Amino acid sequence: MDDGDYAKEFQTRYESSSLAAQLSRPDHGPGEQQLMINDAICCIDCMDPIPIARLRIVPGAVRCVDCKETWERRR
Image 1 (cartoon, rainbow, N blue to C red):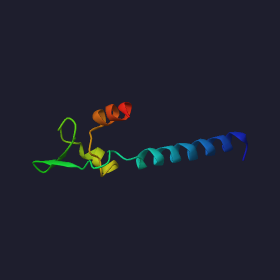
Image 2: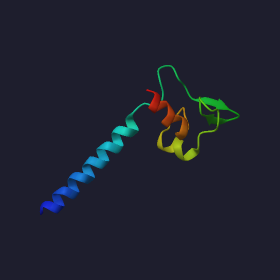
Image 3: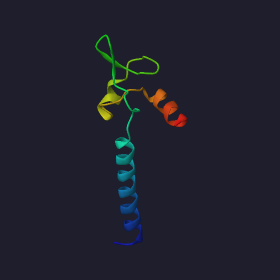
Image 4: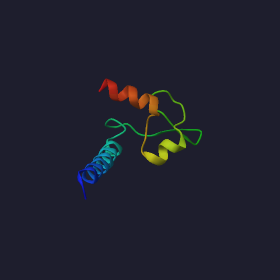
């Protein structure tokens, strides 16, 4: 392996660990729970349904992506 191979391996490991750390961060504050409206899991801030794709990635999501970003900026 040359220096380029080591650098690529380091980058791959760093990106993987960063993604894992991001996904393990809680999506909600203490006491917040998923909100069900008409058999759909909805955002606790805007009350819009949370897309299925987001729930597959973050099963315990309580906010849509837009509200999650706003929530994180305020913290």
